[in-house]
Length: 73
Image (cartoon, rainbow, N blue to C red; front, side, top):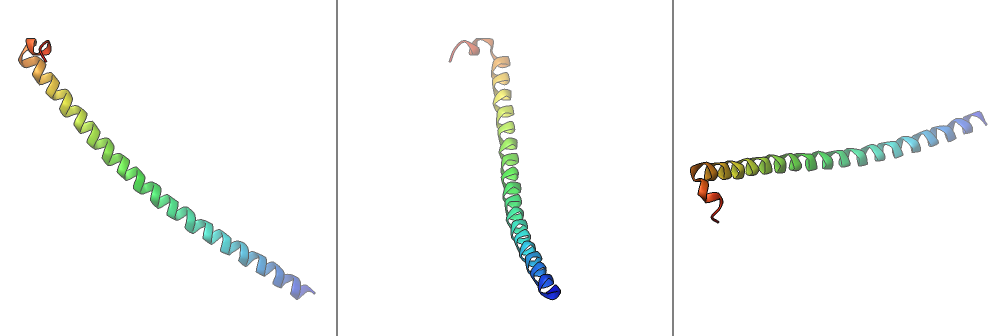
């Protein structure tokens, strides 16, 4: 009776451990996917910042070179 009880508890513990390992693997995969997404967003942010700066600098350069150029398209 005691041995059977211990076997059942061991089987339950092993099943819980297997589920926990499967969950850990799933979460690890999701974490890696999220890290990739963040890296892509950081690259995009850097690109957009640079693009904005370049366009802003271009507008400033055009405005400072000729005041009438602001009024004429």
